[in-house]
Image (cartoon, rainbow, N blue to C red; front, side, top):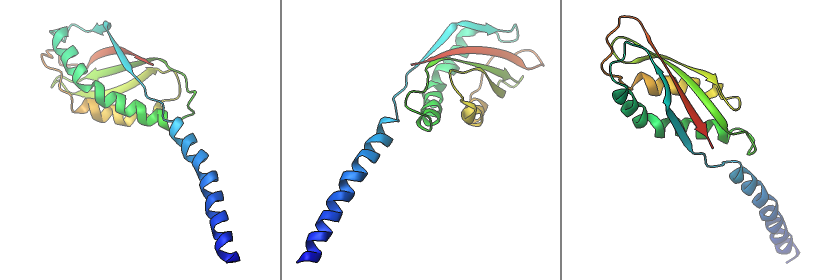
Length: 142
């Protein structure tokens, strides 16, 4: 009988201890929202239409947000929000050759590779020039 009571006490104690740990881990996963500033885009002359580029970027937003969510889930829940500025270099075939993080509200270098993979699959149409085209986009992370 004494052994059963001890087991129940240990089980209750374990539940009381593990619950705050679970809640703490859960609260650090803060939902983010992403707002792109397409008006501030600087397009080189090699890209014919800004509308085509904006359509391509809008299609990628949910994947970018997923990358940011993953990066932020590893950080403290009080990690700062703010401006994320990306520079995308676009090849003549319309695919991105590189994505660089120019400015970030916090250390987000962990998402560099993920962003490169996203934009290597995104085709920017109507690229005329033979050299890489530079595209700078600002995202607001809230």
